[in-house]
Length: 279
Image (cartoon, rainbow, N blue to C red; front, side):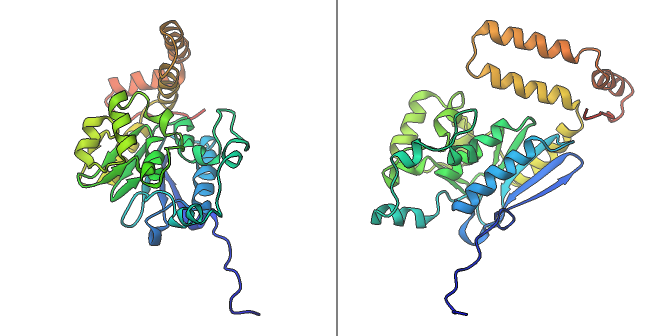
């Protein structure tokens, strides 16, 4: 056997670890030697993990984080080397590919799948979230960040544009002129500015601990109401007022008088934790 044999291909388990406890999924990127950079295996792991969580029984909240020194450093440097050498080309390879029902190619779905999960997703971000890594955390419903985190729409540094659903996910978070400035400049900003811009929810000394605490709190609420609220936010993103108003009524009508809604009322009146069914 040759001592130069090809190493085994990385698996989903080599890139992401998922632990589910009491309805909360703790999802961690674990390519720590590369600051969780996005290689082919990481793209596949993000998509497969997100798709699996969409239908996981009993799921009530998700926390997405990176182990080691960073959340995600962005695209693996090997990809940029291939671009520079001309061995990696784009064109039809990015356009004429299989897409999800929502219109995303695989790289876009690695970020957008977290928005499609029917329960709240909280990204706990430290170290760096650059380029594609920044777009992955944008897929979450909320982002808890450290004060010294480094974030950037970094693609312009490499002569590119954000193409992992960033343009869709930035809508409603950042003012149009601010988004353009960040995209055209590629400048790096910290946690405090991320909150002021609207791309981070709160600054925390320990984002993962605070994200898990909120996820557990969410897991203790009526899961049907939580899922209904996430559906309403999806509708509200780009629908007309009449459609949003109708959607509110439909969701509320389904909740009122349901067993979990009655339990929410009773547990609040009796000052005890709710005992909610997932089906």
